[in-house]
Image (cartoon, rainbow, N blue to C red; front, top):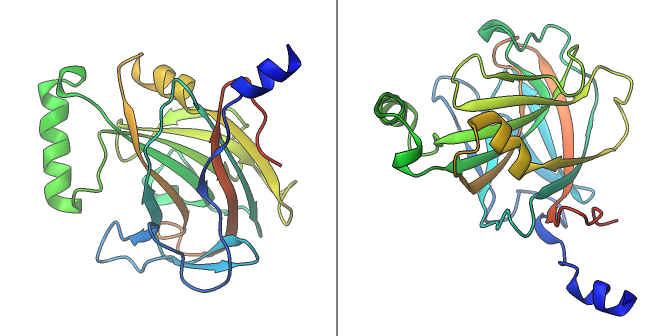
Length: 229
């Protein structure tokens, strides 16, 4: 029975392993949200992506194809130098994070109201096709308790989830595990959604400061399976 159970285990689906040094490898690409904001700088170093934000914002993103029925759990490791002292996730002027991991979704038109579809179409004329139908954003906040959830101050199509907070773990690697399927269902009322993009970010464009973070070992596993070592 032990052998049979092992044979049924799903291998980790890797979406973020980083080797060498220099520019992040394809299919990762920098997505600049606004042409008027300096982009955050990303580079590969020591088997991780390092993000350096200087009054800046940009995503480092890649497409993904994930079967959430088989592998709903996203695992990753991250570290920050320090949380952003002036951040406040309840205000646009404070909507910055030392680190965030972001999963974007496509949703069928039938799962969204006509008003939502119109607002998304308008957003895409302003910011491009990278605006998703819905998103989950796991953040390293400065003050809110782990597990805090709220809609983004910019759009109700994005759910913010505090995965780490404060400075207690700053300066060291922290391993995370998130149930993407369950979090999406809780955020968007059990409506259907398909993950299409994974992104990393460190942003300081609202608080006009500096921040540095690293991200590594991003992969999906089955609900009852451990994250890979």
